[in-house]
Image (cartoon, rainbow, N blue to C red; front, side, top):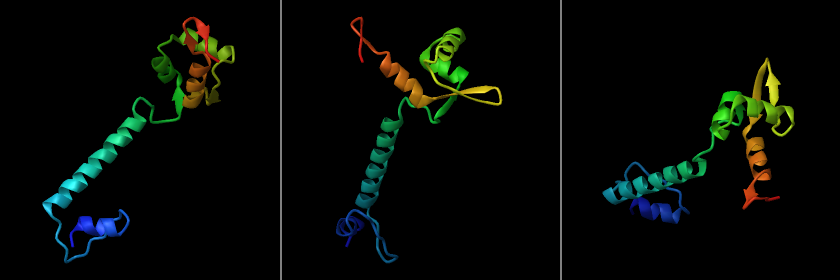
Length: 111
């Protein structure tokens, strides 16, 4: 019985035994499954920062704004932040929320 047949019998989980041979087809199937999983993971995380809390310069780069504009957003309470030891941190989810709240469609705010 091939590894593929074992996989089907075990509900998608492969269990190999020492006396089994892995065929080229099994290796090819494994490669394709692995590549599909890697591609899916990349698609899901594309464009998203790998961390939740961003520093001032990171936020400026993401939004493409000046330090003064970010300061104005912060002072006016538009963009919440946390301050630890003199360093400001912005939550990535808050940045997305502000962007959604201020979305404009043909000159009219979408809310």
